Amino acid sequence: MVMKQSIVLRKDLKMGHGKAAAQASHASCDAIFEIIDSNKKDWKEWLDLWKKQGQMKVVLKVNSRDEIEEIYNQALQLGLPCSIISDAGRTQLPPGTITAVAIGPGPEEIIDKITGKLKLY
Amino acid sequence: MVMKQSIVLRKDLKMGHGKAAAQASHASCDAIFEIIDSNKKDWKEWLDLWKKQGQMKVVLKVNSRDEIEEIYNQALQLGLPCSIISDAGRTQLPPGTITAVAIGPGPEEIIDKITGKLKLY
Image 1 (cartoon, rainbow over the protein chains, first blue to last red):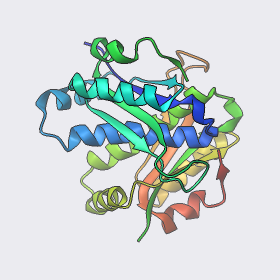
Image 2: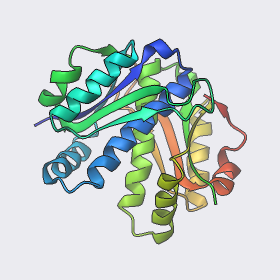
Image 3: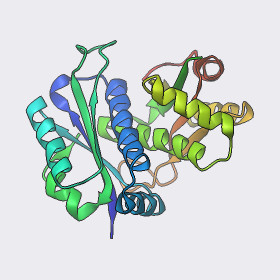
């Protein structure tokens, strides 16, 4: 079973490259902490397998807050580990702006139900 | 004590934005796994404190493989948790290209000895 993590960024915010990379990293790490801090055995197995398989990550884009919230809600509904990032608003963006979501690591075939049609960032 | 993680990307590779974000995320997560998989009590305290403080990350740039390797070696010498990322070479770059380094989470005053003069990516 192939494991991956999808990282979704908002393209409509026109973040600088470094800012986008930082938000992606926040989302990616937070989803991993979600797994580590949980007591879900399947999530922990997914994490271990993903690490063994080389930690596949894809960075994808959406164009609105509505879209990224919808994706996050779908991940919750499917019982996937996920994170949503609100920017502290110290640079570039107003405080509370939602910038990024990460889904997984988890089975690619489940994650693709949510992010399979999104384009690369 | 303020904790942070510095993520260093190679600007000379002219990676696409999504590629750069993925490499930053790889480096960021790998440095965290380095801590979790270690038996170093101080590193684990730094990680916990960094999480409580809001997980400060900065994304910085260098312009060559030599520079990024030098930064990684300095982090090792100072006993900091760190990671170095070689790209698998499936897209955009030749296999084995070094793309990113993460240092920390750890004390800002120590990390800044290495990355304090680097510019934002």
